[in-house]
Amino acid sequence: MLALAVLVMQALISVTGVTVRVTGSGLGCPTWPQCFPGSMVPVEHPEVATLHQVIEFGNRLLTGVIGFVALACFVAALRCRPRRKRLVRLALIMPLGVVAQAIIGGMTVLVDLAWWSVSVHFMASAVLIWLAAILYKATKEGDREPVGVVPTPMRRLLVALVAVTAAVLIAGTLVTAAGPHAGDPDTPRLDLPVHTLVQVHGLLVMAYVLLLAIFGVWLRSARPTKALLKTYASACAMVLVQGAIGSVQYYLGVPEAMVVLHMAAATLVIIITALLWGESRYRGALPEPTEVKAAEPAAV
Image (cartoon, rainbow, N blue to C red; front, side, top):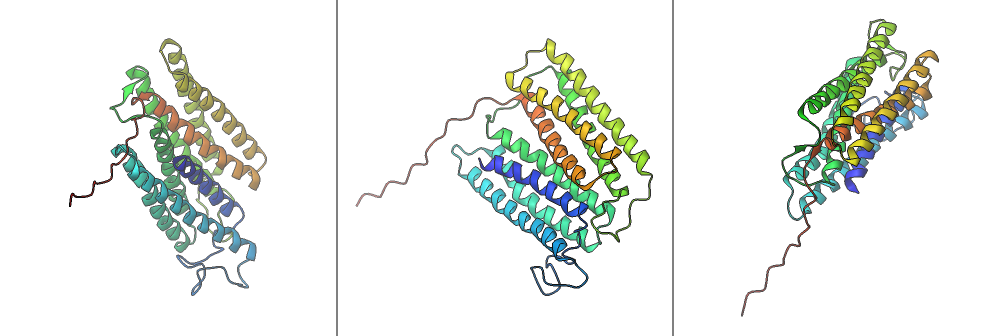
């Protein structure tokens, strides 16, 4: 349950992050780690709207909640018996990642939301969402060396799919960097044509769909597990939904609500692609839990 909570929270912080951006609340707390000089919490300020302060400060508070959940997950992994080294390593990444993400977020504020810093901030979140999905999968499988559920060429195709997924996300951050939602009205935008960036982003999405379709054709001749088939179907459905949301968003002039919805769908695409990667490998059944025996009292 804790691994699932970490996964949900990692996705949620990305969605609240884009909410900060589209509402222009990125500098609602203009300093870091304090909200205002001399105050960790919002204070009345003539140049900063109260709503912007609340939205940005709420996003910062959520980071603290994620850190607490991530630390609890790591402690739970340490307490597992038998000790599962891979699970512990993946769980350790979560609190460390939250700290790193907080530092990157602070840097983003200190450079006044420069477009490149916002892009780095999101890509760091994307990596943490991916690893959280892998952690969640690890709680449901064993610790053996992975054995391919599908043939080697199909696993190589998945490598290409993951690479294209990363390229889609990077292109998406550039579209946002050149678009109107900067997080603050005075933040300079990326000086590239939005239309061109959208075309590149769209072509990469088409490449993702094509690779997914080829994988599905090969899947018919393989012997996939039910979990792999279910995950593949979910990936197909999710990327089609995301593509539809992105198209509607563009033609409507990127309204705020659609941007948030697009980001939420993007986090689901990251998760389902990570799970597709995980389901293509078999690591055996979960190890049987063992109890730690208490030390017997010494004889008198």
